[in-house]
Image (cartoon, rainbow, N blue to C red; front, top):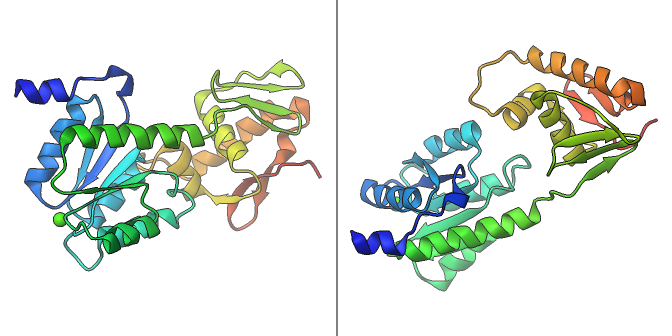
Length: 245
Ligand code: CA
């Protein structure tokens, strides 16, 4: 046990990142969960694709460890392909876990969009270092540079929004909503999609609540003439335009 601790020192800087392990074999799942927790990660578990899908929608994990062979008619590869073709979920990195070690299975896994690949049995130490490497890569890709659209500027690091050099004081929900829109301009989103993305799928609030926050956001932006950037898309929901018409 001592040895296990030495191999997996706690890394507090990694805390609060949820990693989803999708694996039908309880023994492997428990071993991975213990490893993740000792490395300072929070873990989520799923034993099949249906559970995995629910966890992804509810918690939007930072990374998914995905077993290839799962019960039911869909494999881990199918699930990976589904995630990577979904605009809202494709940024979540996936590490495939498999008992197969042939080159074919490696190519299939990478074709399906997996970010990395591990063959069972694997060492827990190796697993942690692969997870950290994939997370580092995905963080480097996710843009935390200030975003500028028209007069508006949003700095993800300081979480400040300015317009024409003036700081706009806004609540956390309006900030998250605006940050989501500004990083995905010119795309229409339904209220359900906005709920999933901005509030997280596990909250039970009325879709109309979004309209209230949109109204507040527009009011905050109106003095700078930027309220018109947030457009109502009839029959769908809302969109942020990257120019004023
Ligand atoms: Ca399995």
